[in-house]
Amino acid sequence: MAQLQSGPVSRYFRENIAAMEGYLPGEQSRDEGTIKLNTNENPYAPSPRVFSALRKAANRSLRLYPEPLSDSLRSIAATTYGVRSMNVLVGNGSDELLSILVRCFVGQGNRVVYPVPTYTLYDTLIAIQGGDKVALDYLPDFALPEALYSQKAALTFLCNPNSPSGTLVSLQEIERLARSVSGILVVDEAYIDFAEAEGVSSISLLQSFSNLVVLRSFSKSFSLAGMRIGLAFAAEEIIAGMIKVKDSYNLNCLSLAAATAALQDLPWMLRNVRRIQRSRKKLTRGLKKMGFQVYPSQANFVMGRKKGQNLRGLYEELKRRKILVRYFDHPGLEDSLRITVGTPQEVKMLLQEMEAIHTNHT
Image (cartoon, rainbow, N blue to C red; front, side, top):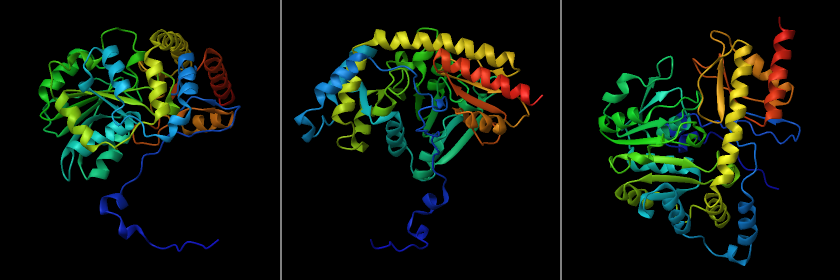
């Protein structure tokens, strides 16, 4: 086999692409014995209807292109969430929808604002477009910084519940933010189904704000991370503009079938959510007993912090014991771990191993 010639090819890239750092996903272990609590996957299987739909869809029709706009899924999503089909866009995961939004509204030097720490893919997408990132620090309790309301930005991001903190901003604050921003407000609700209170989704504000976009994911509460499905909800004019930018056939036939079936079995998803909420409480109590500060999470993970202590060593020791959690090597987060809520047995094992590590180091 001929060897490809290597050399300094960075000069061929756009300057901002050559200079930027790419997004770093959480580690994906293929070791069957590893307890994986680092990427916020659901520990429970998707609805049996999903498997039935996948078996039915895996036929000769795979030779054909899928629906360009995933209209069958748009229709059931509209009914499920109380909007019209033209207010829904389906994406290859909510990550693709984020990419579409940045490509739609951000050009060279356009300002994008969001509170940090948060989902770091926002950084990457802005850098690709050459946008001007304005990252404003959350308050110590993860309340929104007051400066967020007065920024003149093309795009404002709010991850709600936030990652990595799991904290939730109230609907009243989001309404105030939507009134204040000069451009598009994107509320990323990947984890909203895990919130204990009802009526916290920003979808209810869409009728009042034409500049609001709400994103949802099937990766978390619906247990379909491997299928890559997301939904965007917005005014018809925004959806129509996003359609111009999306790939022609961005959702494959199997993902379309899986998502449609998942929405047709909401009780299954809600049952799994309740199981995760119960385990979240146990995980939170266990971490607090070990001296961690734990933020009030409304997601399927918690953030444990020991102020001033670098927790890389704890992360690495857990990894040696075949338990993966998320350590962020970013300024201000070195003293924190984000831990996905697993099954009751996984949570028990994690807490036992953390207690053992603590005992061995004292």
